[in-house]
Length: 272
Image 1 (cartoon, helix red, strand yellow):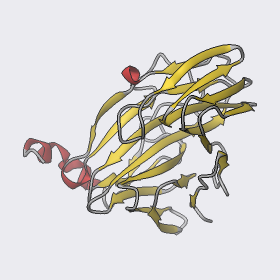
Image 2: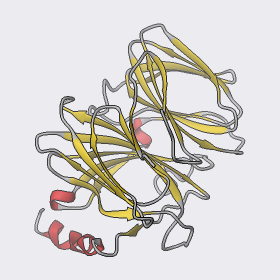
Image 3: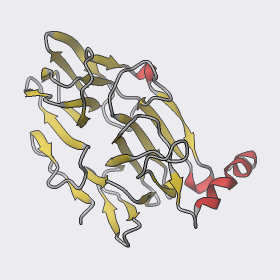
């Protein structure tokens, strides 16, 4: 089975060419100034994450004007719009705009809402050459008052030469508080945009896959361990989104490599 893809960047909606996940789906929307896109959410909840630019959203008669602001993913926190299941919606671009559209099945009845940059939590995970910065956009831990049925969404920025999602971890069975079942996808950008990173995936069925991260590539993980590294001289960004039976997050590290996480407090004390 193939667990990665390189998405098209055509005008309009770009769908996944294949999808090994059963809950998660993703679309990448590109609109020029004045262009619009209309759709039905159906039985899925959608979080529209503004990658760059501004747009006006109308969702079942509720209008959100001029949402967005950052020129690209490397220039600040995002604006996002939650589109509930069952909604009809339209998106109209004010200028050139790029929008990520992760989605998952939902039966939640709630009103649409905007998540502004001031609601996005930030921080650093790891230490030394496996440190990376994050934005938590829609998580139970950082945004407990924002309703969602399944979606968990955030962003990670992995500096030049650093590893991310390290040690490799999995989240494929519900065994709380130790582990929670979640499918996950990573949607990638690279800065400067001619660079690359590498992604490693392996699971307990002896499947493994390594692929080159480029702009507009995506990693789709219904299960298994996963990790990312940025090429020296380049920063990789990925929008991460998960869906499972509940929204509590709990992961299990690869038992061979998990000891590395125990070094984080010492490394941080050393300023690394």
